[in-house]
Image (cartoon, rainbow, N blue to C red; front, side, top):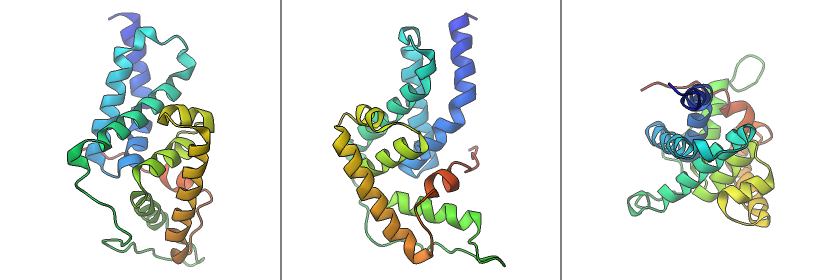
Length: 187
């Protein structure tokens, strides 16, 4: 086995779960998330020799993941499903003795609110707050201006607030705290 192959295998083993969770946040479906993560890693493997800055691999994979997600959403068979303003099944949150909603209920509420966002806004939120990309890096990943990233993020956060406020939740920290700890499901 070559050292480049070993380096890629080590990087893949270390990052596959994080990339898969980010893909799940983008699409809301574990099977589609597996496909997106696989496509992102295949593109990384194809360009592994050309990557000069190994410290920027996380940003490269995040950018590739977002671009793959957007490209896949442009396909005609993905556009058949339309999002609506009504939730199909309500999210139930149980309250413990201290009045705090349980962790599972909060995660479900945040994920349900994320699924209700348009793909572009969801991509901005995931890139900025889960992927820890800067505004400029997110704009580059989405091939848009920094102003677009800022406006899409503001709209997405306002929409998330509207969805979460009736449940007694706030958006501050919701994506980072509630979704990052999501266990990885093996299928």
